[in-house]
Length: 172
Image (tube, rainbow, N blue to C red; front, side):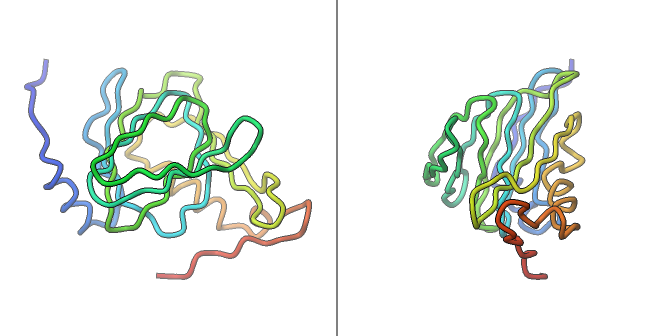
């Protein structure tokens, strides 16, 4: 057994603030996963996890966009110091500023479980693009990989139903 050590969230957030990666993994144990993430500009996808997720806003506020079973988009506002539970399978899109930080606790993925990253058309609401993948290691930053895939192809960003093309985020 490894020695038990406490984590200082202020130190973690300060380290992420000055890093190029927006995520710091705290642990990936046999059945649990914990990480701190900084907000991202232009978050637009909806992520559906195969496990329940708990999010605690360390710094700043979050607008957690989510989709109901009938496809309606809603927003839950999580203020600094608040916590929210998101059940497995609920498509959600955590949107918060780059100077805000969230602690995420969830179950590590099991063999055969997949995460779903879905973009919806801003013009008509149809599914625009979806990628499904097994996330065995969060150090690979699966959200950034999904974004690279989506924004790397105009075909991925063009709606087959109404023709709307999702623009690329402005270059930094």
